[in-house]
Image (cartoon, rainbow, N blue to C red; front, top):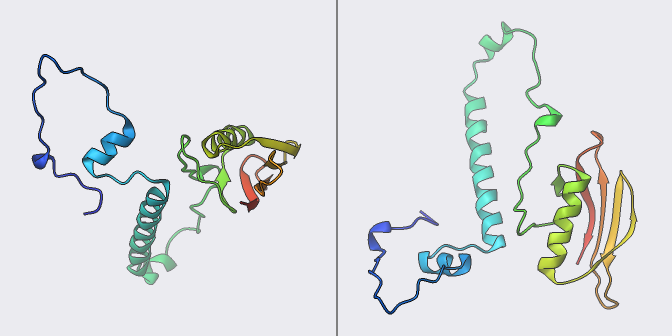
Length: 163
């Protein structure tokens, strides 16, 4: 299994009196445990889990008895717009065309974190309650982003993303 840790192989040595207890960083802990903590790896694992979930649902749908459905009550859609699930790492946001964010405020917080992590300054060209246009302040930096709110008036979708 990818990402599993064999805890029986990890040795914990007692500390000597002359050693200093220093907290371990997240990067060092991942390295020691052999865990890949790169954003691209997390995205691949997330996509694989989503595909497995969809395959499971498809298999369940294939087992539905059509005769039982014919006698069922009125069909009711299961999807409710307010039940959309948003998943993104707030410390290491991944932004690409089509990405969805819960609200304008949450998107603005994430885009600031994204710029800090990417070590560039964002200049907001135009922004209001329904759209956001931003670009990199550097002259040679081609980075650009455009977002709009969706029909629900809350959710923000990335329309254009250029790096």
